[in-house]
Length: 170
Image (cartoon, rainbow, N blue to C red; front, side, top):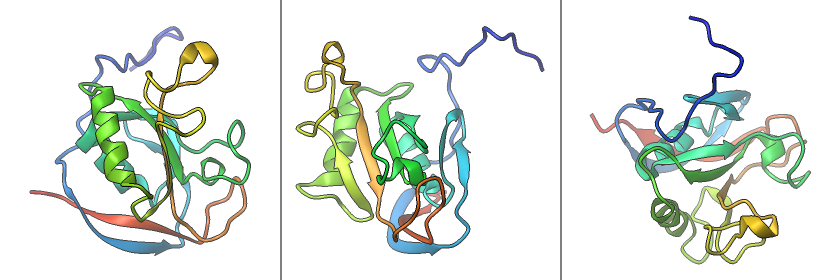
């Protein structure tokens, strides 16, 4: 198959079958084996492969898309984006800002639900839905989720990250 240079993915209408929704199970530490991999159907977004099942669960459950995952620059140097342990999310195909808001409430509940280290949403600088984060003022509306982990160096996978076990619901 060949594509023209001008071809691009139209996320408003493109659909990827991510399989069954599944369910989140117990929290577990994942040690070793970290490397940056693309999110299926969203190849611009890389994450540490140990959080990929969690990310795919969130994509399926809340109909979101990842706008940013691993990023060597452009985010807090000592934050989770340079470790591949953070995602910025917005509505995906079939989703809405109400779905993103539901995910934010589930993930935060007054403090981050473990394994999340930080949840950036309404009330947090440069984060939130379009009513709280105005593009005209330089803010890009999105939800930020970071996973808890052991210390690490930017651009390198950390030793251990905490994740949900995600089980298929078949």
